[in-house]
Length: 574
Image 1 (cartoon, rainbow, N blue to C red):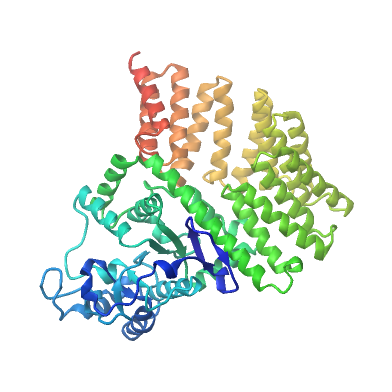
Image 2 (image 1 turned 135 degrees about the vertical axis):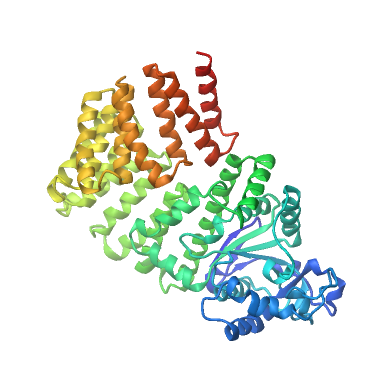
């Protein structure tokens, strides 16, 4: 399956993956009689050769699951060991320099990128599948990738900002089509590479035809996760899409990482780049999942009654809502509801759950009336089926509470959260995380109303359960410390606020590290508490930590960095 992002119109037919039809045959290179018509830097290896010859060489010379390190000496460098390099005339050439014949080598028209730790056979399989899905002629599709087209016998590495800009720029311009092979599906190694993230941004801004793909085994795992009805099965992919940053990535060496970050700071600013990265990844994955749905629809005997398709729609709809494309999520989940109601009937236990998910998507989109309608229907269906005391019914009340909260109807929200609390205590017991969640939600409403004593009472009940069940160092327990600290700070109980923030900080530094936006926000709030208390020295210390942390994770120009700097400047005058 290909993650596809381009401005060309897509038409889906019956091939695997919905086989995106585009104008490849108009723009693809024509076979050539002589590779010397082009400079060595322009050449690529044909997919035909990679599928038939390189794959065999790898199988013959290495163990299964070989990566680039495994085959660099035994396959890639060996090929050119006795060949003069056409670039410098010295012994030792790149892999592509050793090939002849238009069915094997030609002017590159596809750029291939993948992480060097990936299974190389899986990468080649994904490439071949991509060509088949897009009706690309394998003998006329010439692939440029660094391990095959750069001379591995010569020294490599970035030594300056100008060199980095020049090499990435040349790579972007080599071909219109750029293909990135990701693995594993739920935490792609390639997204850990700073040069890839910057390259992805530049390719997007240059209107290149950008695509992500993966091997069949990885795609199968993704589909299984989407159909599992367990949001935790794909949570890591949600986190990757929403939270990948240039600051959290690395180049091959510390020196190259520093050069990369200097280029980013000079050319765009890290905070702006991160916004682009999230937006691009979101578009790519949504398009991929849309193609996946079309594939399943095409191959279904009766798409209107296919429960397997409905399960896939349910998982994808919830996933897309989690990555903040709510309108798309609503459309997908409504289709799931229609199939399930048609086959199972409106009284089946899956229908309230499906409607609850639709309500959550409406809620996220700000369509509160539609959300409330879905939630109330779910509640009534559960009541009519004698499912009043279930975790699903508690979830419906909690969802209703969220909507009323967003509409600032705090009393109504408290009523819903108390109903959820009552069910959770009856079903799960008084010492359960879902019971703690209900206490926490009620406490948040009291805090919003300025009823600090009631808020503290609820947060402390939530904290007691979470410390007992999860432990004091669990992230959710840290969030409860943070909630209590916020109430104390608002209630001008500065010592209590600082004590709770410090407990939260221990958790956040352990889980997120010191250079994370959540950790930085706690530094800032501790500084605020010391400032309100009149301890300027401590306030300056923590505002400084907040500034440094925000700068490391968001970039020098981010407004949160500037806010911390303004606080430091103001306090320094006292």
